[in-house]
Length: 397
Image (cartoon, rainbow, N blue to C red; front, top):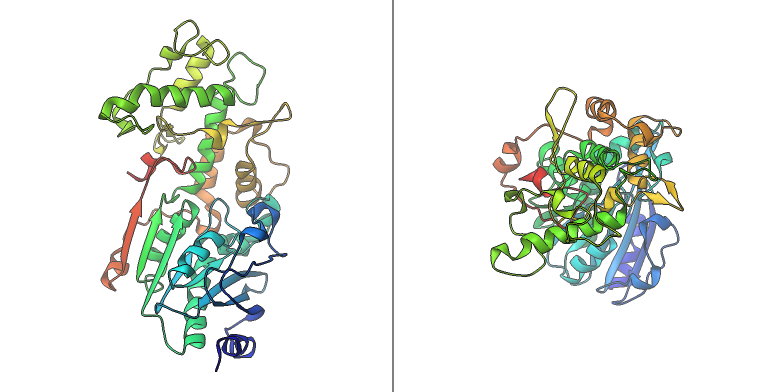
């Protein structure tokens, strides 16, 4: 049977439980894809998404419960290396990782992605009063992807994949760890980048850091602006970069240094008058670089890392109005409180404590025992850099 015919036969051949076939199409290498159903928040520009091999593209809509479903997409190259790879998401997920699908399919992998149970990377309404959507996001979406990927590969190629891998970064890294813990048989090898395993504490830290730096009183003398934070980060790089003998804009082992924000005071000669720090601002900046503890004194999050961008929370003014990045309201309005009216203006440790206690979707886990995954021969590699300011590098040291 020819490649196109074999591909199109999947329209009737695929009988994965509780699923419907959304798309089956045969694509030549470099075919431009149009993706009309993808949410704008996913940032996908159709003209930039191309098939990176001659392949069969499959999209399934799989019911995970009576009130929830996940989309799983697979790219099945004609020239297959006998292996499959699953991919994770970022932030609140909700988007197929097309760049990784493009890259891994070009290498010969049968490659899969999932929207983890909701369409889009922003929007608290995706989760409000939808507990099963939270479960899909927390753990079930990737597991469903793993089962569907194995089934689709066996159906299309007539044999099982010789090896099954999973890759993800940030939220995708968290999904990696969850998979290895909950479903050790799903994948043979896992690459977990910057895993946001302490996700609710991470997002809570954004709001708490903003408040330490004077937000939402953006017209007060204590408020530290986004421009000042960018200058602070650059000043740290200028101060510590060369201490390893190489000037490459990277601070080697930043946790070894003690940063004194008084060096950036107005009149100190380091920062110009437009971004230098007043005494009240110095106090707030100092607080941001200190660890966050919960109401019982336990470490919840390390302080902000030296030389790492703070933009994930310090860019917090929209059209002159105090407004935190949407990831904070998406998580706390939707996942945590089921309340569209919730405001971060008075965010406190009480909110952090509550999020960790209720843990919707089992997004966080205190489990660290990977012995089952190791015993079945699984291999897990994890890396952590300073680029992902959403998951501080000190968190995973």
